[in-house]
Image (cartoon, rainbow, N blue to C red):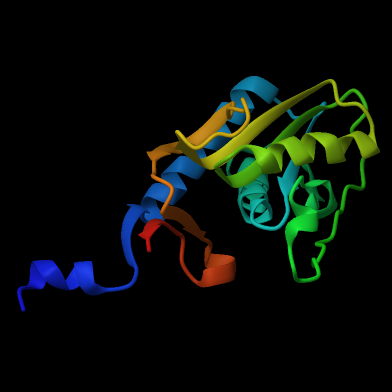
Amino acid sequence: MYPEYISELTPMSQKVLLNAKEVQIALHRLACQLIENHDTFSNTVLIGIQPRGIYLAERLKTLLEADYKIKKVSLGYLDITFYRDDFRRSDKPLEANTTNIDFIVEDKKVVFIDDVLYTGRSIRSALTAIQSFGRPLEIELLTLIDRRFSRHLPIQPDYRGRQVDAINDEKVKVCWKENEGEDAVYLVKS
């Protein structure tokens, strides 16, 4: 059997979109873009969208404070489980994550952070969920990966690490050192 045909026979194949070094470069670029628009973060809060956006949000907070000497960046986590429009469609019980927002969002600039922007439905859910904590002055969206051509809703990121064209049978998998043991982004085809 020829080597070029072996990959076609495997049930799943994956392509590296970003390696560890490229993830780090993207994180620094995103941090610098945030600083350009939010300066000292005195009126800005970061909200990591559960479950996967929290790793990106924590990394950005650490970079902003350690590498770019921002004094204090407020970071919270938002669980959107019961705000999703498809949460009743599952046959198995839902497991909620923890929302942890210990600051006021009223009249603050909020930056939602998620790892992958796909259909836009998670962000719509986050927009609804955040209203329980007050009325933000404005809301921006930061994603590590922006999957174009997949939107169900007219939602676009203000900050993106990388834009990817992926078709429906392809999945973008973001791995974080804290969770999967490596920093990498893969395009997985089943």
